[in-house]
Image (cartoon, rainbow over all chains, first blue to last red; front, side, top):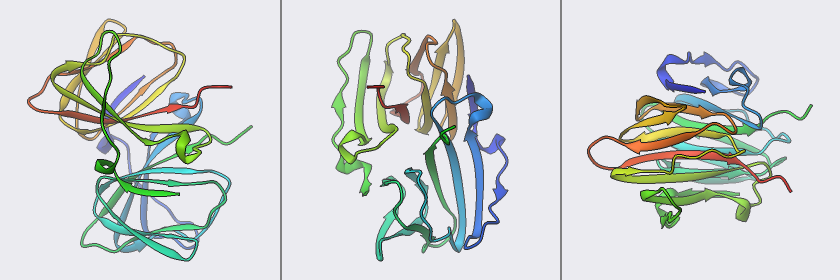
Length: 114
Length: 114
């Protein structure tokens, strides 16, 4: 069991290729023995973005703060706080902060299949 | 794929035994073919609560608005917006709105095993 404010979990820089100004907090993870999926919080600086990439894990996203666009299959979809976003497995996607100030969202992914 | 503000998804009353003043929105569900887990938003009126119950699905919760307590194994854990909460499978739990105004949180659960 865990009941914790997100600020108690450190934000670490995401230094993968194609990422710019991105930090991530592991809010609920396999450390808590989450059996099926995990909860991360992303913080993207003004002008920053995640990589344009695809992978076998779906994303379930909820936007907490800021404004951005989802790049998805060569189109751009704007969003702001209060948006829920579902990205199916294997589809190309990228999150860009297009607003003033921080973009913050939750991103849940399934555990890797063992 | 889905990019939608939560207000576009209707809030429906949760009329199960032990629930009081609870509404739920299915933000990401099997309608979107979410392969592993789903995202719901709960809205609990001032003084309202979910049932005190247990089940085989874990909960991953993020609190968006308001104040409440988690009743968990005979203890109470206060929380407010910005808290992440993990409830393992099979543990007794209840969410109570103890603040002024609405309590709003996301609650993710795994898909039922077929």
